[in-house]
Image (cartoon, rainbow, N blue to C red; front, side):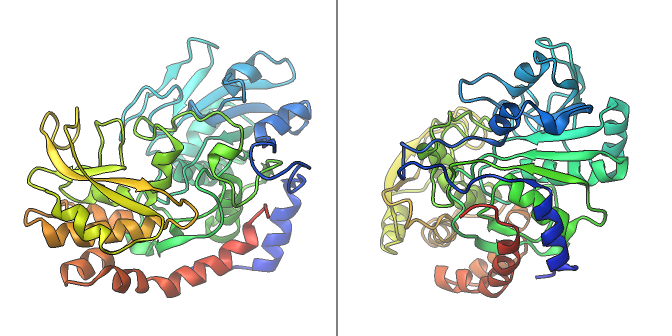
Length: 415
């Protein structure tokens, strides 16, 4: 894995100095008795002092809400202490009206009258020009991530940081929890020649970081011109926390991410986007239901025989309402995670690919090699095609994962 590691100690010290400090955890017992306060809550509680005298633009989507589910754009627009002049929408749009692979375009927000600029698949100087046109001095980022490298919001973060540096803008990241915990990084690390919008830089498939931590990593390791960065951390969040102990409301970050349970499996089962099997889009359990026409009970039997930690598989039949196999009843499996701390989503995703190919003669990869973009190289595809088992595939990325983990730890903000 090629990581720059440029002036790592100096960079780490400089970035740490630009972080709005927070207590590691508020005094309260583990679990529901502990209050997690988001970066936005802390920014507002401080009277928006970090934004004083700045013309502000916000990169956000429907997940940018307070704990009483008011949108932060509505809250900030109504507050005279903030000079909010623009909104920037990612994939799916600012108000979340677009499906996967879509955005809302350039609009005016009817609720606030603010101009909304589209950032989806815009980067570099073109995005810097958008920031210049908007007239902002400071770009604020507040979007709920789900912890997977191929979830595009973290690359919207990266692109916006790069563009803000080019345009001479300040950048502020308001932190939110990694909903599947931040205990460890898992899975293969992207190879740079496979970089796309579902993976700009060499990080692990399940990165185990919050968006503020990722921003620090991007600034310290990957951006050719670091941006003036401030991060507003959470209080009360611990790396071992799953989303349901935070006390925060869950707003689906995208149309096919309805619950934190979806996020728990997503970094593994999203790999089925790279195959001709349904990944469950068009059902009420996307990424938990997987299948295709002609798949039968043998798949559940094969993957259950591997005794993967923390999860069991049920023979399942479903008819997606859109996407692959729309209106057709297909057979497959449903994942049931019974011990989420033991569950390894990436190993599980590989095991499902291996066994699906073994038991279903119709198995095929997408013709555009989308699986290579998702996994970050052609290794997973070529190894499975050559007959490799789960342990062999997973073992092949351990050296590069260990290297990423060593770099990652310099940018973590929470115990």
